[in-house]
Amino acid sequence: MVQPAVIELGADRAVPEQPDRPARPRTRWLFAAGLALASAMGGAAVPRPGLVPRFQVPYAVGAAFVSGGDTLYVTAHGSVSAYRLPDGARRWSVPAPGTVEGMQLATGSRVLLVSRAEPPTSTVGLDTRTGRQLWRSDSVLVAAVLPGDRQVLLFTPGPGASSLMRAVDVRSGQAMWSRTQLGTVAPTGPWTDLRAEPPRLVFQTVDGGVEVVAAPTGEVLLRGRLPDLPAPGPARFRPEDAQLSTAGDQLLVIRGGDTRTLEAFDLGTLARRWRARLPAAGYFATSCGTVLCVFGPQWMTGVDPGSGALLWHTHLWQGAQALPGGRLLVSSGEPDLRLAIVVAATLRPVLDLKSWRALGGGPGGQQPLVLARTTADLRTWFAVVDPAVPHPVIRTLGGAGGVLDEECLAFDGYLACPTVHNRLQVWRYRT
Image 1 (tube, rainbow, N blue to C red):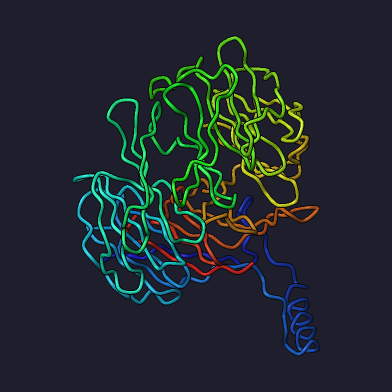
Image 2: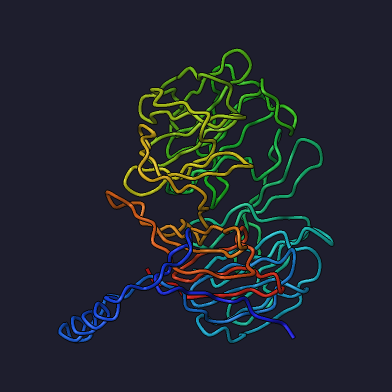
């Protein structure tokens, strides 16, 4: 008989650091005083952070799950199933043979996109209400769902140093446009600016030029050349290649070799805005909220997006994601992974998260951050922290045994974790 994961919620819900001490005689008096205060306030005691177990569903190694609205979608044991939140009642289940590459939701169009790596590579669109297959496209994987949830970008890798990109209607699977992307294997290219209106893609052409394309229609909005931009190289990364990316309304170009520069071009005109010398070779630049982050093999650099001024350079932190209030969640490299909340413009520490790891979540993440850490007794503890307040504090939710914390996700007030018993445990958490 399958045993559920054990949920252990202590009276103070704190991660045990030291042996418990005997309770002092005044504890009962304080408890009575607390009841009296709550009664005087009409019984409206302030709720404390905590975990409330809701349900478990079958799971397995290599399975995946995603949430949307009031439903949890799980692919496991050769099927895709939809479970109602918060009680876990199964709404539908349909076959999904082979290895699932991933799932994405187009919530506005009520479509669940399921990509299979084998056999063979394909993507299907399922109706989220019934599980009915709406369409199937072979030899393609999902690159991105466009804003508005009406279209999805699909790509076909290869052969060689090329890939085929296409946009299809998310409900019918009907192709809207398609084109070949040379010199790279999607989804690292083309480079997207999905916040623009219309959403834009940037393609590099075989002669070294660039084209800015409207993602919904495939219309070429702008065509031109950037100074000294070579033609695309092989699909594999080479330090001397120019690496393109986008951040807001800017096209960013990192030049390798001896130049080690970062340039920003206006996506509307392709005019150069600024050029900055990098302290070390970089391979990718992206937006980190109020700063640009440039990533290298063992380092990270912060650049002002307006002027190109160098803000900081660090070997301590090698990953970052934007947080509210001009802050970053930064991470060190493995094996001694550490996290911290810092000021984006200066890297000034705000809160050291030490051995806590941040859990992934739905689109755009969640606030507050949900954290997890596993102690020496193999119990996993969960906590929350609001990164936007002036002085963030970690607040413990509770602990559980037998969960695989690296695969946990937090979404819309729920926490879901695979367990060692091949189950997916779902909790409701309050902050």
